[in-house]
Image (cartoon, rainbow, N blue to C red; front, side, top):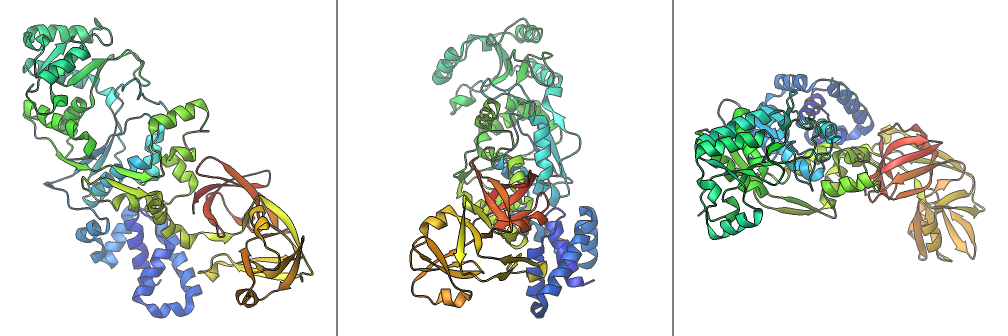
Length: 563
C-alpha cells in the first residue's frame, strides 16, 4: 500500500468525521510528490482503493492508525487551527457541552453553526456533548411539534454530531425545577405575583416594587404550593425572581421564572401545567448536568445574566458562558414557525421540502456534511454578526462535489431538431473532465437531437453553432444544416454562434428536477444516467449539481443541489 496516500487518506478522514474525500487527498499527495502526475489514471485508482479501505474503518480506529504512522497530524494545536476554533477558556480535567434545541420543528442550516461549534470542541477535547431537548411548553406562537423529537436527532446524526446516547428531555425534569424554585422562595429571592402585565411594565419602567413582592416567605410558599395544585388558571399568577428594580436594563427587573400553561404537552400531556422559563431551567440544568462550557448566540445574553444571578444565589460555580454572533445567509429565509405553517397547510410537501432549509432537505439535495461543517466553522467563535451570500455556502459544497460529480447532459423543456446531412458520428465524452480513469459516455448519433427550447429560440440564421463535443451546424431559415465536426472550425469562425448541450434522440430518458424554490423542471437526459444509483450527485452539464432521489416509471427524479 502507498504509505503517502494512506497517511493523507487517514488524516482527511479524521478531519471530516470518518469519511475521506478523493479530490482533497489527490491534491495533498501531488503536493508532496509531483512526479505522480505522470500517471493520473493509476493514481486515481490507487487513491480510490485506499479511500474505500479507510472509510470502512471506525473513526476511533482511523485515529489510532494515524497516531502510529503520522502522530504529528493529530497534535491538538494543529487540529484546533485546522478547524479554526480558539482554545476553550479555563479547561480543567474534562469538557462537557450541550446543545439545546427547542422542538418546534427540524433543525435548519441556521441552527447548524452553534451545534457544529459545540461538537467540534467536544471532539477536540475528547469531551462529552449532551443533547438536551428544551421542551418546556413554549408560547402560543412557538409550540412543540411532536415530529421534531425524531427529526432533531436524525439531523444531528447526519451532521456527524457525536452527542451522548442519553438524550435529556426537560419535560422529564419538572419536579427538579419545582424543588429549586421552592429553595429560591425560602431564600427570599422569588415571589408569586398576580399583577397584570400592564401593571408590571409600569412598575419596571418606574423602578417600583409591586406589592406581591413584599409578601412573607411563608405566604409565598403557601401560594406556590397552591399554584402547583392547580388552584390557579393560565394568566392569573406567575413566579418571579427578585432582582434589583434599579437594574439598568428594565427587562432584567423581576423576570418571570414560572408561568401556567393549560395546553397539552406532546410528551407529558396534562401532567404538568406550571412550566419554567428558559433561563431558570438552564440555570439549574447547566449546574446539575455538570456543563463546563455553554456556547450560545449573543441574543441570549440576558438569559446568561439571569443564569449567573441564580448561580450566585445558590452559591454554585457555573460553566463558562461564551456567545457568538448571528449568522444571516442572504437569499435564505430561515423560520421554523413559517416552515411549520407551510408544512401543516400543505403548501410545503413535508419537513424536507427544500424551501424549509432543514437539515433533512439539505441531505436530500445532496449536500456534503463536510461542506456544512466547514462553512459553519469558518465564522469562528466571536460575537460579530455575519451576513454572507448563499453562494458562499454553495462554494464550500462545490469544493467537494466538483471532483466527485460525473457530468451528464440534461435538456430542460426539450425540442427535437434534425441536422440535415449530418454524418453518423461516434461520440465519446468523459464522465469527468479531470478523471479519465472513471470512463466515458459513448453515443452514435444520426442527426436527430433534443435541445432546450431556450437555445432553439436563440439560434441565429447564418451563424455557426456547435453541439458540445459533437458537431457544428448552421441555421438556414427553418433548417439546421451540418457544417463540420472539428471544434477548431467553430472556434475560429467569424460568424460564431452558441455552444449548445443536447441529448441524442436515440439515447434519452425522461428526467425531473425539484428546484430549491419548490418548482419542478423536466425534460430529457442522456440514457447513461441509467447507471446512476440513488443518492449519486451529478453535474448537469453547464447547469447545476443535483442528486438522484428516485426513479419512477422510467423518469429519473433529481433534487437540485446548487449551481
